[in-house]
Length: 294
Image 1 (tube, rainbow, N blue to C red):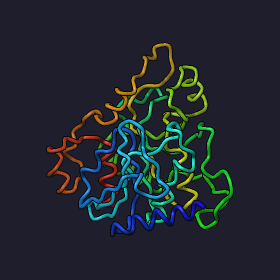
Image 2: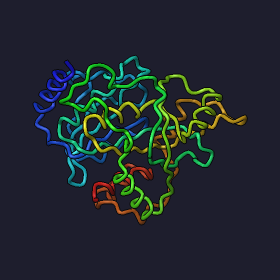
Image 3: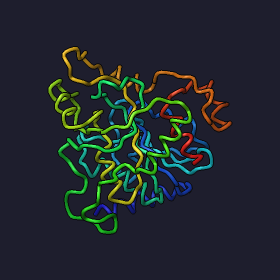
Image 4: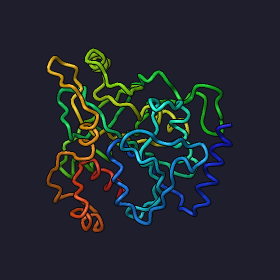
């Protein structure tokens, strides 16, 4: 049944006459403005594609976008689907399987996350080196379709070491502070209690959010190499000094990171031209920009 849905989605997308993507990107909360850098974009609403669901989450545009950046063909999800919207694990991850079937081989997953690690600060980048799935869901439950992936996929390299090492080199060369850590995925939509945050920290997690883990599982299952990047937007340590969180502030912070001097960043000329116009100085984007040169 899902294979038929995937084929229906592929037929719809191919009717748009878009180029086969090399890289797929999931743009997390507050990060959807990356689309301003895309050349010759083609936009399609999620609900126009068979099998896709409408995005109802704040700041999630709910569009699939095709275009080029620095000569690389891209497919981008402007926003994503979440369990807390009432969707199943299969519905949440269906777009991942479609983007893989379209031909993309690498998947970049981004998200906004709360920091469980006291050394992390809002505005920091965290390269995801592993995750803990606390959602209670798994998109692979049920009958397996061997044409999509094997029954028991290995998750020991869930976040591609090669892509992560390349990102480390780029961030280091650009003198950008970053962390490597473990992402904990929860169902939401309620934010974590202080006790839950302390528990998640004890489990080994460095950051927490309501996405990413199911997308990663589905991506590994269907053959993607995955790079995960968390934008740390707030402290979620669960200590006695923990301040109440406001989701509107978190979303705003995810779109307005701490600005640093990027004069030595190796932007493409087109990016340099547009930087002042759009005023984007977000560190995690430097990593994405330079990955396309690698």
